Amino acid sequence: MDRCQTILQHLRPLHYLQRSGCSANGSLNLTKITLLLHPRQSEKQQFYDFVKDDPLFEPQFDLSIYEQRKLALKRLVKICKAGFISVKDFKTDPHRIFLAHELGSLMDFSMATLMTVQFNLFGGTVINLGTEKHHGEFLNLIDSCEAIGCFALTELGYGNNAVEMETTATYNREDDTFIINSPSNLSHKYWITNSAVNAKFSVIFARLIIDGKNYGVHGFLARIRDNNHNPCEGVTIIDMGEKMGCNGVDNGRLAFDNIVVSREALLDSTSSVSKSGVFTSNIEKKRNRFLKIADQLLSGRICIASMALSCVKLGELIAVRYASSRLCVGKTGKSDTPIMDYQLQQNQLIPLIAETYALTFALSYVKQNYYDVNIGNYRNDEDASMWLVILCCSIKPAIGWHAERVASICRERCGGQGYLAENRFGGAIGGSHAAITAEGDNSVLMQKVSKELLGLVKKGKYSFNAPSYYSTNDIVDIEYLLNLFVIREKRLLMELGSQLQEQTSTMGLFEAWMKHQSDNIQDLAKAFADKICFQQFKENLDKSDSSVAPLLTKVLALYGWKTIEKNLSWYLINEILTPTEGKTVISNVQLLVKELAPNALDLVEAYGFPDHVIQAPIALENSYIID
Image (cartoon, rainbow, N blue to C red; front, top):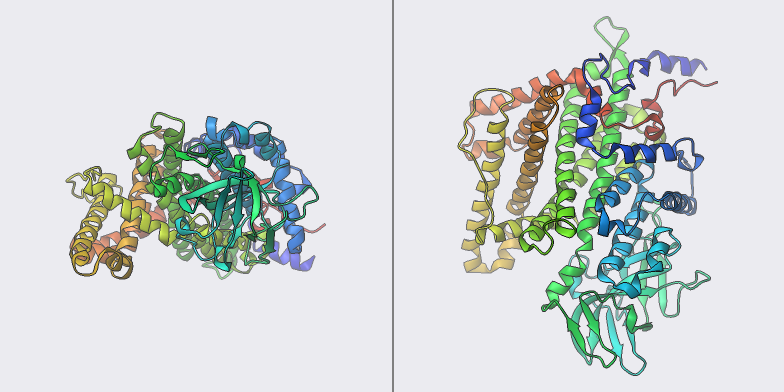
């Protein structure tokens, strides 16, 4: 008890935090910001009410890997049976899919990972690539988790080149079946979530072979475990074991030794095989058939981004709450000053919050584009579809990298308390590292972004809309900041295109792209993502309530200046900014951080998380009192 009292002396009570939707001094309506960040508040509240006071969703520690997996699955099943997500949402309201991932990750990142495979990769592929014979009651079984499945695409030897996978599905006319085979160790399906323990079914991707001819990669719905949950004949399942995080996820390795599946196992919405062995497809080229199959990875990237960004917000809220209550040495030599008052704490945390706001608005934009392309007004629009690909391939890396920085920095800024598992940063770090490589390695995805941007420019389909706008020396001159973002993207794009053209003529495109232009490729893609974030924040700022617009303008300006500061050497070398202007960039960041510091707590409270979802003791009032 003496130790507890000592700790309490160094914490300021959290009862000063207002739960009424107003800021600490009552001058700011936080609900206005919350609704701007997260419009679907009623659905969120339903979820928060659902998990409240349920022991299943309370934090549990010191669990074996077996217990972690069992707990993650049990949580998922309960959420699914409550109807918070359905695979059918892909055809009616995909925003519900993304929201379920956003909310689920707050409680358990492993559980949300199982969710994204069950509903997006497995279920989403069945509903989008399958036909009525694959749907019907089976979709209901997916929704209830009675038919748990996995997504067997990645092979050990073909992680980023799945189109060249070795697994084959050979049609056998004699008994009207396909024979699926893994011909080598490199063809084993690798990192397959849900497969080690949970899955009874799998969508298996394989090269479709008829009479020795390869018709490209297709998906097959197959059973991998029988009714007794034993591997089916010819199926080998290897548990990949413990990982550095997310150990509630049962990743496995799959191999197939000439397993036999019916012809109806082929997911045939775009391609089919007749009983006589005639192949037909409404997609002419093999590569385009593969790209159609890979479409489910786009929504998967949005799901991963949604999960990671929720953890980001939770981490920032925990860190700022703790920093606002943790008392340390002040002018008097006494422990009477919250560490949030220190410039060190402010400089580390507040720019992260500004970036999180920008990423939130950008992710909402990507989600809406997904809706528009798949069930909205831009169905069958090739240009809109390509824009969606670029957006998905940029937002997942941007958020994944940000999540890793936030988790590490917030942990550090909470000192030793941040190192305790109960304060949730360990799980956030593990989740962020999963997000960096799940559904595509971030840096590889950024190559895709730059490649497609160059393609759009070549076709005359990409406009920069860069205004000729010069600074008014106003620290919140948003138009000037936007101009600096656009200039950087445009210059990087033009320079990359020019250098590639010159080098390709002497060494070929592959050599130039992979061995000489890697840094420029990454810089361009990041500049594009930064610009999208800034633009979307600006658009939301323009429609924000007048009572919160001044504060959000400063947040946007801080995001802008901080991003320019990160790339200041580029702006100086390319003479976009003078050395004097460069010094101003640094001073603007410092000044905006200082001006926003009194509202740091307001900005993270606007994320709208109730205490029973936050769960970290250092962010909760009286958490250290022992009866």
